[in-house]
Image 1 (cartoon, rainbow, N blue to C red):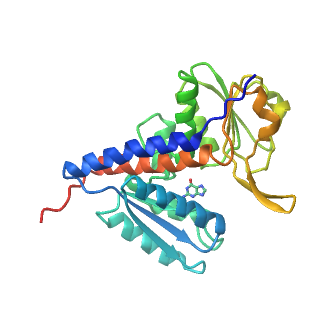
Image 2 (cartoon, helix red, strand yellow; image 1 turned 60 degrees about the horizontal axis):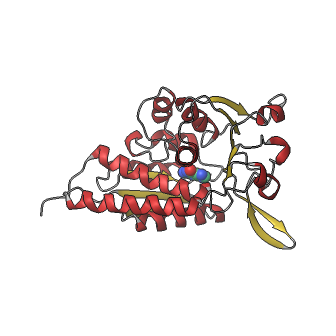
Image 3 (cartoon, helix red, strand yellow; image 1 turned 90 degrees about the horizontal axis):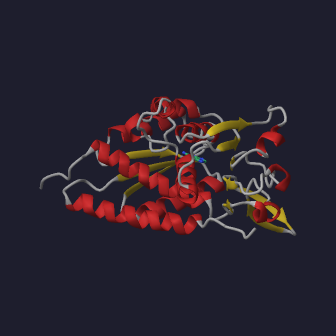
Length: 292
Ligand code: GUN
């Protein structure tokens, strides 16, 4: 079987170009430029890279961007106050607090504090509830990017067996909700699952989001499956650092119908979906430019 490697970078670039046109059209109609605020606490190097990439792409799309960097030792109250101020700012349509936070800060508290209509991560319980009851809402960016790829690759997903490996709030659970809504039969496999391997081998669609380098090899993949690799793991090989996914790409690629690479697969699509959510939040808020 020839290998169909899904080019997430190219697809994301295309989507961002389309959204840049939409942003221009909106501002020409008198709406304010959609605004995205990203809050970064501390010095986690991976988080710093993710935030830089998010802002770079958001600027390419023509968004108004604000980055707020707080010291790793900042208090819960100081972080709360930043979020409360962003909730109130008219120029900001979307708020993202990069996770993980330093251990002394509560992620749950911050997720609950972000105004649901500005929650471009889709992590607020209000938005999670809306997603799981099939209501229109802001959907977490990574699963949204995965769904976009699946729809382009497969079309109608009805009746397909989708297996999601991992049950995080950021990827696994919302991914399962979206696949269910797309009429898939969904299994969520995790560390306590009994005979996870046989479930994985039944998957027409396999989404892997566990953060274990190259966990999935060809023995877990049904020939002809579409495999989406959400993992981004830095490992050391032959004295060099490199990024690998949760799927052993070299072992699996030739038996799949299609597979996303790492890097250049799901990562860029996650960022494109952040722009999409910010635009959606701006449309929903509908704030006009001030008359001067
Ligand atoms: N850390 C890793 N992924 C994400 C994400 O999608 N959103 C936020 N806020 N933090 C993250």
